[in-house]
Length: 238
Length: 220
Image 1 (tube, rainbow over the protein chains, first blue to last red):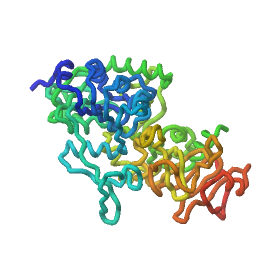
Image 2: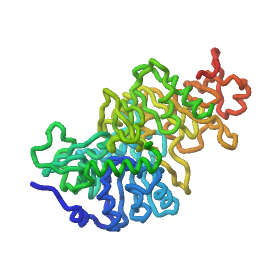
Image 3: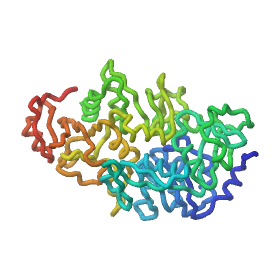
């Protein structure tokens, strides 16, 4: 089976009003080419699920989706790094659902791994309690966090073989492997696509069963240039 | 000395050799520069790594090595990398010995508020990120903040006014003027700067506190 797909064919699956998980952490390990295509296609009323928001200061990765008001609802642990998002939030054009980062991760893991929810002590005694079941186990209070899934998950990996096995690189895995499991259609944008048999099975971070499509993203050399420019431009690399 | 550096220097003295430590963004992360010689800690980054190092120079960065603030970082020998579920398992599961977190407000019951600033009615930003998990799971929670706000109002309060990050979770409060231990009976002043008397500390602190019998001068 060959899951290599043209990015435009992937975009044909994306429609207004869909729920989309987007991998990455503040723009690191993010599926940048697919995000650009979502912006270009102009799909709207999206519910976007992302662990945090865009690269600090805005203008990169998720930021244009907020600027163009394509996102109706954002499910995350952190909003504030993206000024474009804070603006639409203030002006009532965006609904935000906050979860503690660890709970956010577990909700997605539940959806992908066939669980009805997890009990976490995180958030007890805070606003996060609102609307949730509180359950006591062995004398300790926990909140029930229920599964969170998406129509489409767009993740970012380093290498993929054509069957859809994904290898990650550096710190750029974070929530990508969890998200891969929790959508009807998971797309992996990668730096390099290799033949079946060319990935060491022990280095596979996401098993092929989770992945429906693979798209070619920036090559590693191109990606190095993108982040060097970004980090230098924003004063984080000298 | 800038108040930020003073607080960061004092906070660094709380770190012990071999401890697994998570430093929040802003002042806490700068505490890493002031860890006493001979104390080696294992720094955790919540995006999924243990034992990260200094910021690289231009030319030696790697586009797949960004820290929890999206700044380029490096890995030290012995470093390891994992996904977000493991990262928060480490945090929630009690495997982080200490966290130093910047706070907007703290109070005499050990509550901390650091995630929600109202931007419109019933709307808050920036969000809690990993802070709620850290205050829940880290074995020791050290809250650092300026003693008073720009208007001169105490940020060490009787009761936090902003939405909480965690209830009764703080172990130690460090400001640029004083250090308070949080006990089941309330706050205990354990250190103060030499320039201020206990009464002067009382005058700028909304929270009730008692004075430790062995009260000492603010350590740096």
